[in-house]
Length: 135
Image 1: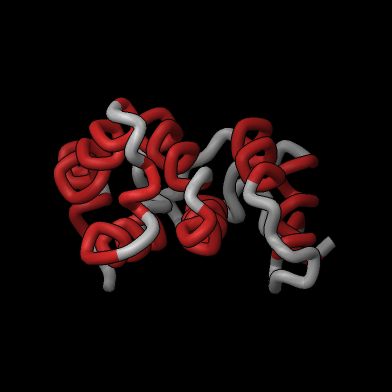
Image 2: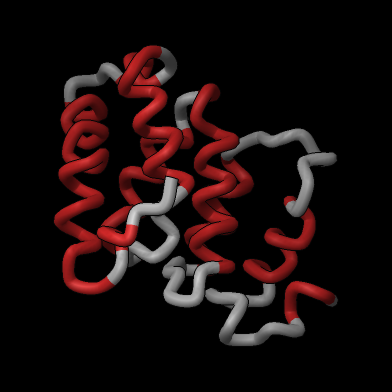
């Protein structure tokens, strides 16, 4: 799934309509386990994985809520990867590293060490410093 709604002036509105508003409502009601299965889980997984270009300030809380649901942690990881690698990707390296570490992913997760390293080094986007990923 590629969602071009997440680029430019429609990004926040589309992200909120497709996932953000639902996750915020569920989190406020203390029902995060509802994100673990079913149609909402599938939608969350797909939207998270494609939301790299959404502004960090518009998606941070949704990523954090989704990261508390074990079944969505791999999708949050891929969302962070996408946020780092997308041409117009958006993340705050320190906050993203804190979130990444909270996901409790297996250490052998592909590309986990590289993502940790670039975030630790304060690199917010692959295109900001293309050589950082290779180090």
